[in-house]
Length: 306
View 1 (cartoon, helix red, strand yellow):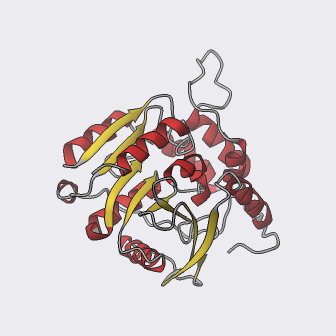
View 2: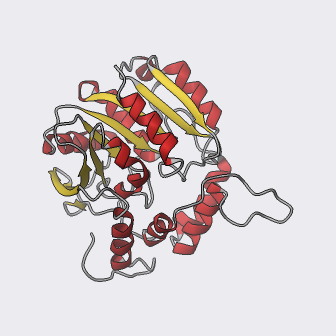
């Protein structure tokens, strides 16, 4: 999937540029980190780990697109004080995981089998689980299907878990999805985060400035030869009501992906052991690198709970 040379086609994707951008964001991680490749039935999964080896494991799942495991850089140092952090590249998605030929997860059940294999490969009978956006969708499904292996669960502005996408968000994303290109990725992210130039006579949005190295990685991932992501319906209400895993849901107030307060309200109504909060001044795609001190404090407090 990622080679030593460049791969350029109709999309203009360049594997060398992607790897350079990936490694540059990875340098923002603590120096005491370890890169692993964990074998699974679907290929080898790239895992970046740090924190005390004797600490309880925490598995982190990134959002979709070009997010990749390295996007947790702003939170990982504090999380690694209390957990052995394992951030993974979703197999078949942009990153350094290597699918076994064309065998990649095609169903939710495949994703669950893949995560079981990752935990087994890490020697973890169970783990805390955290996910952002699409990674939150995967994490929630895993908690529902493997409750014995999920100790605590945090979700950062998860998509398709408690509410659907806004139509305007999908329309804005469509050109980027149909014909991926770095300029389209940048324009879309600047629109969603409010960090681009505002239209004439419009008030600029308030939000966290985008990390330029992170943004360069999103651009470099445009056209990545990824498999079709596994999608599906939102979890059934009865399944959510039965979830006993302690859960923290943090929703981005400025998200253009979905209605933030609707997401928080539905989760609070369905999950019996959930703590919810709406984070002011941050958008969907600015997580999890936004407001690092405040966000990391919430996450470590939650993970340290009884």
